[in-house]
Amino acid sequence: MADIYRFGISLDRELIEAFDRHVAAQRYQSRSEAIRDLIREELVRKKWAEGGTVAGAIVMTYDHHKRELVNRLLDIQHDFHDIIISTQHVHLDHGNCLEVIAVKGQAPQVDQLSTALKVLVGVKHLNLSVSATD
Ligand code: NI
Image (cartoon, rainbow, N blue to C red; front, side, top):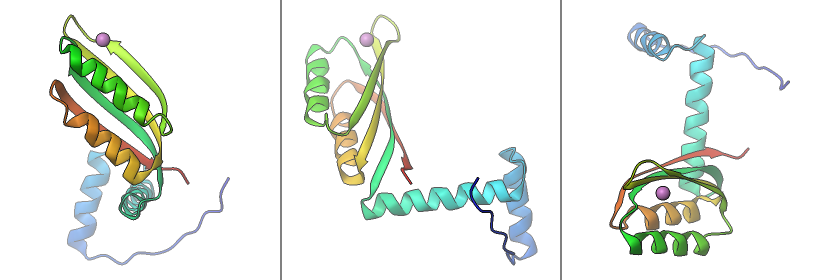
């Protein structure tokens, strides 16, 4: 287990009360756990901005009946094969597909892949979720 460091934080009453409401609403076990998440999120955001290595998932839904779209999606994924770890395809219903693409690579490349997929006609929704790898 990693070493644990403790430190004190000074906050005005209004801010700590608002934070405690956040902690309760999110069902955190403690303020420490909530603060840990905030720090991690900020570090991932910073890494994203600086262009470091990130790992994550692209979750998207699209119209299965747009035949050209399926080919475009495959072409783009082959173009980015070096950052795609795996792809899971789910046939949601007669007309819709769900795809979950696990990625790991430099932030700008991951962003490029995500944008290339998102702008295609027939892609109904796309969400990119990333984590830092360290
Ligand atoms: Ni399908």
